Length: 354
Image (cartoon, rainbow, N blue to C red):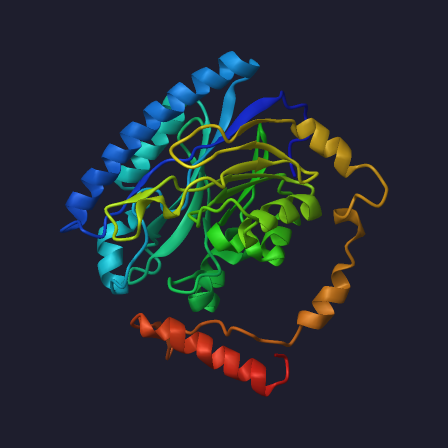
C-alpha cells in the first residue's frame, strides 16, 4: 500500500446490468458495434445512478464495478480462435477507448471484465479484469488464473512470468481512493488468490461475476463475505442482470450484487434486474484503522504463512504450461480442458489426496 493520506468517504456501486451475448454475431465488426452500443447505455446508467446516490447520501461515486464479460457473454462451444475473433478486445482498440471515455466523462474509477488479446500470445485470449482511472488510463489488467474452459496465464506460465513477472500476475493499483485489486467470477471461491492480492496491499476487491441468481446462500455468496473478513478488505461484487441473445433462460442470473465491508457486513445489495442498488459508502480510513488494531478479529495479522508454504511446496495439483509444446504455444481444442481435469482427478486419487 503506497499512499496513506486521508481519503474522503465516497460511494462505490456494483452496477448490475444486462449482458448481450455476441455468440450470434457474424464477425468482429458486428460484435464490436454491439459492444459499443452497450457501452453508451452503461455510460448513461452510471450518470443517472451517480446523480441519485449523490442526492441520497451526499457523496460522489468514485468507483463503478461492472459484471463479468458484460460486453460479450461467454463461449458456448466456439473454438478458441472463433471466440477470439468475436469477443476478445484489442488492448488499444475501439472498445477499450470507449470504456476509457466513460471513466473520463463520469469522473470515476471503472472496473469490469472482458476477454482480450495479448500481443505476446496472439493465438490465445485471456479473461481480463481491468481498472481504468478517471483520466482514462488503464491502471491494471488482472488475467483470470483459474478457469475450467478458457485459456489462462497458468497455461503458458513460464512464458507469462518471463514477460510480466509476479507483479503482472497479481497487480494492485495504489489510487487516491485506496489500493484496488480484481478477481473474476468463481475465483472468489479460492482464498489463496485474494490473499495474494492482500499481501500486495489490496484494500478494495473488485469482483466482476456472472452467476446463478438465488435467494439462498450460494458458494460465491458465502465466499464474498469470507474473503472480506479474512483479508480485512471491502468487496464490491457486480453480477449480471440477464444474459440476452443466448439460449440460456434470461433470468438465470440476477441479484447477488453486493458491497461487503471489512467485517463481512453487507452494506448494499441488488435484487434481480438491472440495478444500481448495490451501492454503499466506502470508508478507507476506517479500514486502515481497523487493520492496525490488535486482537482476535485481526485475522490477517495472525496468519502463519510459513505453515502453508511448507505444505504447498513441491506439490502440483493442476500442472502449468499445458499449452506449451516444444517451447511454443500450441492452441488445443475445447476437449483439452475436460481431459486435463480428469487427469488431475486421477492423479489426486492415485496419490491418496482424494
